[in-house]
Length: 242
Image 1 (cartoon, one colour):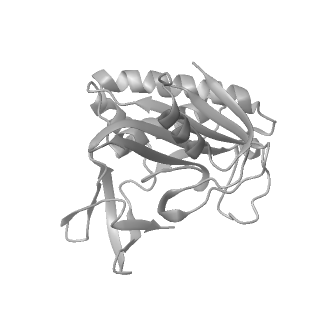
Image 2: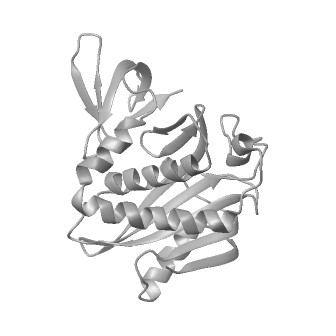
């Protein structure tokens, strides 16, 4: 599978989306860069990291009728792929924080951004963007962040990481065609703070104390209050406070 390496770019997701619009590319084509100037996250946030020390990665996925193409399902595939990659480096206490963060020891090590490209009303392509902290020790603007080198104690080859992550995404996308339920089960098995009461902030800036049960196949967080009343929220309606 093709990997396009850039010295620097504003955003690997933006670069890949422009490429998709201008030419036909093969499934799994991946863009990485040494220096990402304007990496984006959810809700207008930016992914911040030092140049040449982290993985800035975007993967092209062509929509197929044979697999679930919802944003959350692809997010789950990406999350499980990053989780598996970190496990290969003997990193422990890895968890997935709904909807799009990977944590180690409750600190953020990776973030995921899924972006869709439509032709009219039809979803045709998706870009899976992943930022992974690799060889960076200090995080002045992200006190709750961590990196692979902090846990492995040795420098890691970033290009090899990109190749391996590309392989894992391809494997899990293939697996999902026949076992979509298994992907969601894998995601929930390492869900951050599952089966515990947590504080959440809703769109009315009200803090809710609810027990996290699971994430369902549509990406909704399933929660219960102390009276065991069930609630379902999308990622646009509520966020966890940690």
